[in-house]
Image 1: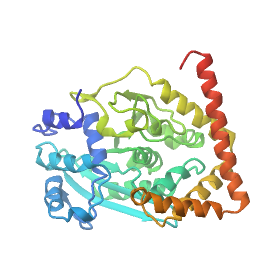
Image 2: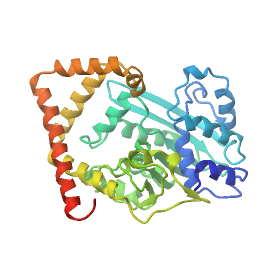
Image 3: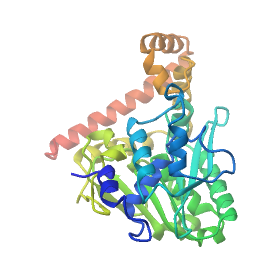
Image 4: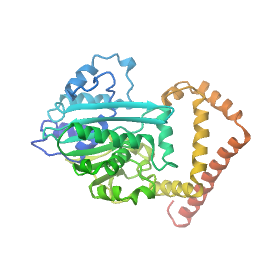
Length: 364
């Protein structure tokens, strides 16, 4: 089995002029959006991946926030490769706004033929980032989606050439949204849109002329046990990619398998993916938008009692933080407690019903 590291070892010495852009390059560049560029790239500065990594090596490692440990290895290997090291980075942006419940980050990567890949970062480790994700269950559009559209239009106004838009997880959703709702002049310059295991949209979005106009250029990739990438609704076809992980951990793109410049493709999704998808869709239909909003608002009120900014901070001091969360829950008014209990009960009922159906149909 081979992953993106094997791909770079195989293709890393060839420039994009020698070997054209492919779907694996898309996956790699979508991951570049997660790199910690905050202290590496100055405003309006254009630097290569190689130079960015040189600066990265000089930083105090104790103060660097890395989402996955593999990111550090990937950064180093890309910088050393002929294929990726000289690609230019520009227009890096990273915003978090607790009041707006927005987490947004993006970077533009320019290829030798003057085409650009605009990479949107997915959900980071922050509570506000996760809160915005859950807002997708009751909001037709979220602040990060609007920011993604504005970012695309601004970048397109400042550079020439054709565009590829992509991202992983929420970043894939942002890539599709921005490409659909940007102005027509920008949309006409888009070659391809890549959604790497990112959620879909409300039906109302899929029915718009904007979405229909970009639909034929969307490439969606999901692992065989996908959960995140099957949330909400998709109209485009999906390519099922083999992953070496299991369950929710298949969302980790470092586990996705490649063969040459292509993904290793599976014929169908696993029963587990179908089960979770069916359960979540049934649950979402069982409650209205107002009920979903109220549930997540209360849940994050409990989490916020820890005063942590990230999930890692909650985990690091779990004993103390769990006590704070429990105290906050106990102090909730009875109506709020009832919302949580009723919502969780409804999920358990649906899971139980689906398990019975699976058993009766021989799908254990």
